[in-house]
Amino acid sequence: MHRNVGNRERNIRLAGGLVALGLGLFAPLGKPGKIAAISIGAAELFTGITKYSPVNQMLGIKRHRRGPIRQIGHGIGKIRAIV
Image 1 (cartoon, one colour):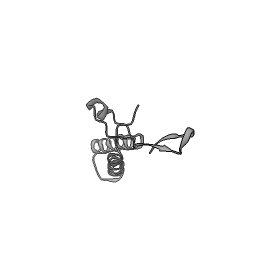
Image 2 (cartoon, rainbow, N blue to C red):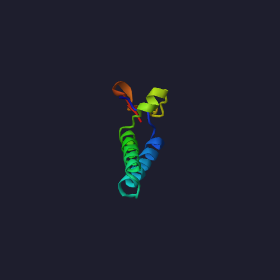
Image 3 (cartoon, rainbow, N blue to C red):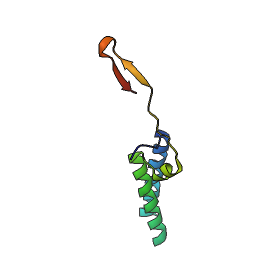
C-alpha cells in the first residue's frame, strides 16, 4: 500500500469524513441513510489517515509527492534527505 493522496486532498477527506460520520450518528436520518453516512464517513477517514485510496489506485491517480532531495553537509559525509 503506497501513498497516493496529497495533503490538500487528505485534509478535505478528513473533514468530509468527520461531517459524514457526525451526520450518520446524530442526524435524524432513516436507517438506510444512517448506514450510508457512517460508511462514507468511515471510508473517508480511513483514506485521510492512511493517505491511500483504492479508487485513486484503480484510476491511476497519484497526488502524493515527495519533496526535492537536498544535500545536507559537505565533503565525504554528505547525507541525502527528502524534504
